[in-house]
Amino acid sequence: MGIKKIALTHKRKDCIGCGVCAQIAPDFWKMNDKDGQADLCGSEQKGEYSIRKIDEIEKEKGKECSDACPMGIIRVEE
Ligand code: SF4
Image 1: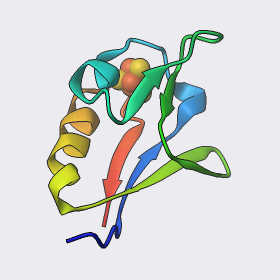
Image 2: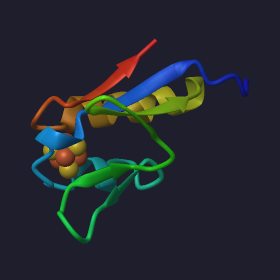
Image 3: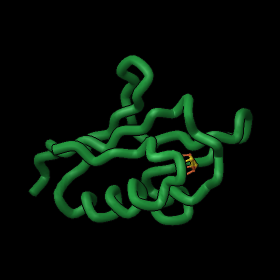
Image 4: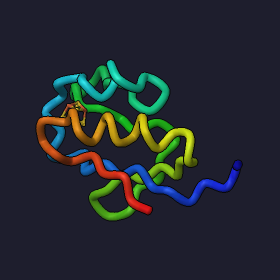
């Protein structure tokens, strides 16, 4: 535990701001007051992706978000 090797990724530019991800996992997502899109908390920017390292315990939450996002722009990568 403690080793964060799984990546939660977000292609923010395609976010439509529906807010579903933030409802499922408010620890991961905050809706941005300025442009209405979701921000992935604690993430780093790589190209057009925001990336946050998560651990095994957080993985299921990440997958829930991935499954629920209507734009298919949230991914869990191992
Ligand atoms: S569920 Fe997807 S489209 Fe909706 S706010 Fe979150 S990232 Fe954006």
